[in-house]
Amino acid sequence: MSGSEKIRNFAESTPPVLTPFPPIIIRTEMKTESLVSISDIGKEEILGLLETAKKFEENPNRRLLEGKVVATLFFEPSTRTRLSFETAVNRLGGRVIGFSDASNTSTSKGETLKDTIKMVSNYADLIIMRHFLEGAARYATEVTDVPVINAGDGAHQHPSQTMLDLYSIYKTQGTLENLTITLVGDLKYGRTVHSLLMAMKYFNPTFRFVACKELQMPQEYKTFCEENGIAYTEHTDFSADVINTSDIIYMTRVQRERFADILEYERVKDLYNLNASMLSGAKDNMKILHPLPRVNEIAQDVDDNPHAYYFDQARNGLYARQAIICRSLGIDTTKL
Image (cartoon, rainbow, N blue to C red; front, side, top):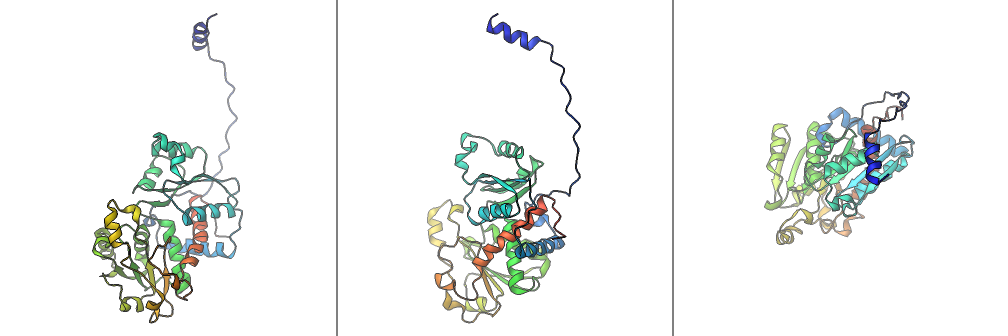
């Protein structure tokens, strides 16, 4: 019998009778939820996540993710966000798969984001994703039933950074209410300041926006402030008066990767720099935050100053992200 005849006979033969699979037992679990934007959660849930983060700081090694697989998909470079998420999963007893360099994946062969997400969904219980395109994380939630945590999408949102920022502010100030927060540097492309501004709407803040004309806070976020009764002022000068009346100074890096014109970047990259001599009149409670990495915007001589908090802030990312992971996987943390 020729090869073609074998194929034809196989294709035309009566299919075998298949033994049915045994019934699947469905276990009811708590609801799983994505976190794409900080606006996905309200005030009470924010406060609940902060309380959970506090519990994880007291003991981060809790085996709550036994049997769970978490995929970290980083289409954009990251150090703190990726490593703190992966550390969070490991300390909770889960397993991590994924990539930190998209050039080593099938996207370099032309695979679409949709296909990548659907493929990874077959292997993981949770997807943590950073992408250079705004809206990528929201799109991912539309093509998979696996919960997605947005680890940063372009210049749009960075909700897990916001939660660790809120936790840092709460730890250092003892409250989130009625604080004066000064945002400095790249307010146009800085997704961390965009998310923080939106989250603080529940706590009656006063914002100072310190930026050059090219990097000012986008109008949509100023409109957000106006619609939500958030007081703000705009400044081009990082003056002693601004510094000395702030509870939090949030420095940002001017992000070279967001600029199409390198000459524009070179012109604005070093306009705002903070050094130790500028802090002599600061309030005792004032703390300096920075999402890191820094370049030149905070001088090395600030590191040992009691107002510096950015390295502690990065450590807080572990506890905040443990809380977020548990939320997204529907794990009850109320009895921790």
